[in-house]
Image: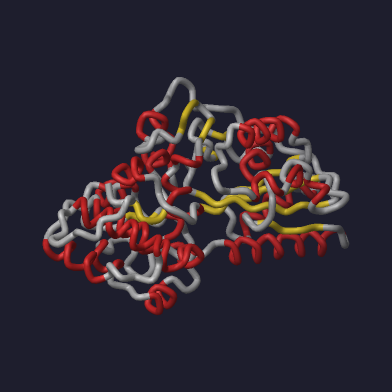
Length: 363
């Protein structure tokens, strides 16, 4: 007779179901975030959040899960890998000033809906197994401390660049959370394995990582090209290079990303040729084309004027050329002051003929 095996616990089943639903990993943690709360308050006091006022406006909701779902006791954290191509390809792209670099997470479809749907399916499997319970799924859609929760749930540790890192999978992945009122056994937290490495700090183009585990968003290229709605500081513009939406440099050089896994998700593969597009191609998009080509993409939310702002800076850094000069000049009467300011700065950098319309923003 075969030996009888003990039935799997609910925690074991949650881990199994998460993998069956397409997540690459899942972990369980409680709701104590006092340490993370103290670090967040310190970060806010230093002003490192820049114009992201919502980080302070939400108060303690981020670090007090029960304020989002009353009665929250346990949280399931999940990982979804998104890297669409080998890192060598994006590294080569950064060395070509004529091409546009888009952060690898934004090359495909926006992940939020996919993540939430899978978390909802996970919750329904749990309900089918043990009966109704209170739950709520999150995917960067509410004030949630995703990285501290994931670290406590054993999915990785928060590296010196402030991204979550996993020993077997690097850091190119999305996180999602299922808040529940279940009393679940937590997984052990992950240990920090950064050691004495400081490549991310040394490699950051704008020196935004001001100290280990400390990021000044006001200098971060991802913040400047995505979250920041206004003028990009003149002194930082040359440092953006050809990065028009986000920046992966700190991840690109992290030794743990030699273990980064390519995504199995078709939705995360490059769309609209954004993995190889030239700056000139993207600069030619009018607003209608921008909206059409970025439908279903995270890029769409920055809007066309910010898109052109970022492209103007990159074109100014591209080394010029007659075609670039003419393309910039054709948009000199754009209705957005933000676009005109950055266009004029770029025009000055490529020595646009007749550039007597230089403003204070064109240094």
